[in-house]
Image 1 (tube, rainbow, N blue to C red):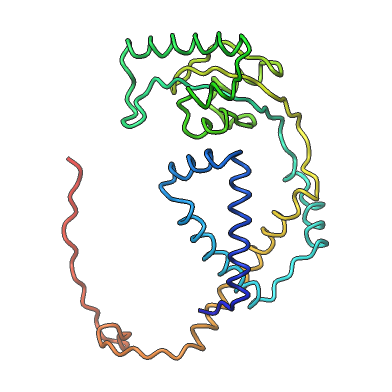
Image 2 (cartoon, helix red, strand yellow):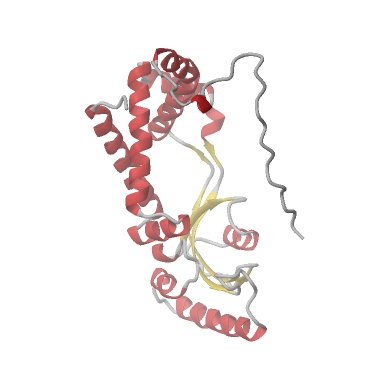
Length: 263
C-alpha cells in the first residue's frame, strides 16, 4: 500500500534482473523451464512473486533510508575473507539412464535395468568415438535438471551423488570415464574443467554483500517500523466477536475435533 510508482518500477526491474541471472546460471531457457516445472510454477508466476517481494524491499529501503556504500561492502569483505574462499570444484557433464521409475520412485525390473545398461554402453561408445556429448545428453539423458543444458553441472565436494563426485574428481580434463552406477542409475561422465580452490574477488562479491547488508539493516529496523505502523493506524473493530476481551473475562474455549492417528 505504501509503494510509490518509483518503488514499483524498482521492484519490477530488480525482479527482471534476478530472473535473467537465474536463467543465465542454468545455462538456457530450456534448463530454466525444467527447473520451474520441478518447482511447480511458471515463468509468469515466479516473476510476479519476485516483483511483489522486491517492490516491498524497495519500499522499506526508502522508508528506512538504507544506503549501503562500496566502502561498507569492502569493510565486510576484508573482515570476513574466509566467507569468500571457494573450494576446488569440477565442471562436468553426465548422461543419466535412470533405474528408477520417475513417477513412483520404485526401482525398475532387472530386465529393464539390463536394457538401460546396454543403452548406456552404446552411448559411451558413441561419445568416445567423438559424437557431441552435449547433444547426446540432451537427447538421451533422464536427468530433468541438467538435460536441457547438455548434462552440465559445476560442483564442489559434497554437492553431488558420491559415486559421480568420486569419479569426476578422479578424472582428467576432457576425459570420458567408464559407466558409473549410483542409486539413480547409470551415469556417463565427461569432465570439462578442473577449477582450483580460489577466493572470490571483491568486484564479483560486492552485489551479494550489499544485498546481505541491506537485509540485515531491514531486519534490525523492521520490528520498530511495524510497531510504529500499528500505533499510527486508526483501526476500529466493529465485529464484537473480534474485539479484544476485557481483563477478567474468561475466553470461551471450543474443543477441537479428535485427531486421528495413522493406523
